[in-house]
Length: 377
Image (tube, rainbow, N blue to C red; front, side, top):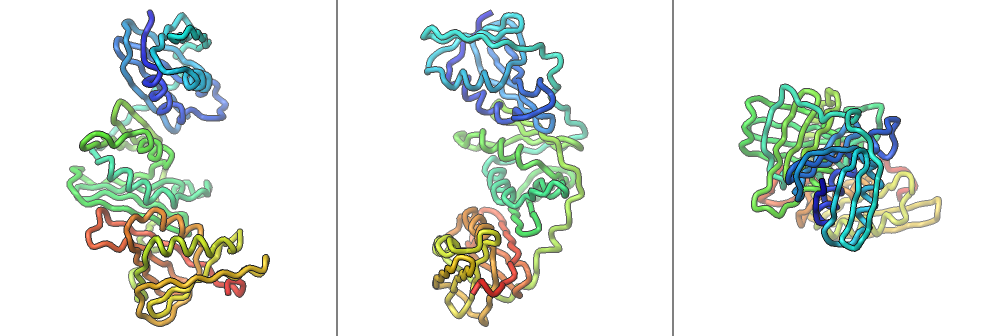
């Protein structure tokens, strides 16, 4: 039974499902996409066993059929085709693809009985989250996820949600990002889950913000979390906890406060850090009355760089070292015109906040200072 679909529509579906297919796996079946055809509907499913996705779209045709097809080959073939209608047929274990300009392609497939099932979420709590909230929370936390797999819980984002607020936080011990929204979320009791950043980054990447009030339906179970929106269902295995008490590392007493033009600070750090040590990326900040001097002195290459910028600061002179790469990343995430930095000592954590009177969300960023050695100037 032939089915007809526009190349653009088919490729958009493949673009959403294909990134979940593992590049390497001991299970050959996981390198496939499960293609399911039904009257008026085409569905692709992919999984790496930790993340599973279903993507549905419209297609012209009747009858039902399904087949597991090599994901990379199908993706690459469709990508190279010109715009226009395509005809799809499943003939036993072969997928046949034809275009209007006489292109014909046959890809041998496999029976779907060995393809993993989409996980079932049990004992779930469900909530609808505005897409804009979800995107902001993920962007402002996931950058700080740890890469150290020996501490698995820090390799995920902690998502906390209850009746009146929802927020995400991540830390790798050197930096921390937290984004919190207040509102009515309707959960009868609080829920904490550690979620893979891969799944969350993928869901916000493939969802559009074109609709008037886009939202994502989220079902959180004991072992899995499922995001559903716009014909997409993405399931991710939750990371086992518990997550460390991050509140303990956020200093409450920070007497030294400075307000700085964010773009000015970002440009100065980027400019000066060109000469910083390639391992530590150390830059020295010297806060003086209404002035910040950013210094790099790299004896390894015989290089030195200094930049002074105006700031709002009225305390005693204060010197602190930062990893320029970490600091630049945080400054790139903050969107406000000005940023507020709160500090205490040379070795205590520094906090960064968007400096705005009407914040869209409650954002907090933390960066641990670096020890200032002699080469920093």
